[in-house]
Amino acid sequence: MKSYYKHRQQKWAMNDAGLDQLINEDSFWIRRDKKSDLPSVCVTNELSTGLVCLYAGDWDRGVIFLDRTIRNANRLEAEERFHDTEVAEAGYPLSHAEAIRARALARWLLDDLATRPDPWRAAKMTPFSSITRDFSRLDRADLRKAAEMFVAWCLKKAEDRKRFVSTYTMNIYLQGVRCAMIANDLDYAGELLAIKQPLLWHHGTERELWSRLVETYPAMKDKLREDVASFFDRVRDPEFKEILDGLPTFVNREALALDTGITRQMYLVNASPLDPVDPRAVIEAVAY
Image (cartoon, rainbow, N blue to C red):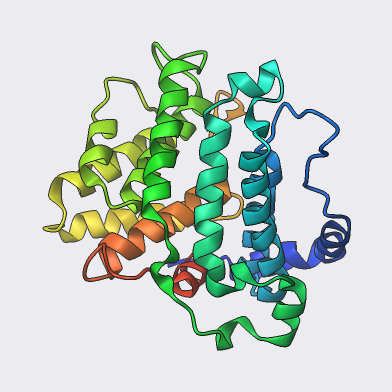
């Protein structure tokens, strides 16, 4: 199992000052007086930055970005910002799915810190490792809802919805598959994986892997376990990319690595996919 931890630490250290600036300026929130074409960015960017901190062991600042992930998702829904403009409307329900998924994962990672009124003070006063945590916060109902929304966008609004040719659409579709698996709905995941749409490149590799898991779970053979471990190690790489005819395929590295880490924990490590999924165990496995 290859370690990327030193590389993650180096990248995190290079951006150290920028993280404080993001915290102080609350840079990711969209203004109330200005319509946004991409409303969910203020949620997904917060989650991604929080994960960068967590992977480097910076839980103090990580909790701040995770708390904002939840806050921003809630505000987007309360203010109905997903339909701000024609561009935003074209991105719906994908944008809403991204917000729901990010909020569910941030809640799971934060546990009871998510409800604290001042997460910065809470993080400074109370080390994350000393908090009594409840791992039941992995909201599988919300993740199942997000899965449906990801897939609905791919099949109804993506430019290549009649036949997937875009690596971006393939990426979004498989994000829906992973949400279904994390929601512990293997029947729905299997239905999505059986769709008569081409999934190529690393998207095809992922589809084949999850298809085998869905078809054989819980009686998985050693070869499947080895292949899941190999895929997990590949997508954990902070520089993971795949080049096609000189151009990179689309990869949301943070989402792919975290989702794969959770799926691995649920179906290969835990005795049952209904068992609590320990956030720290997943983060440490991805970050290693």
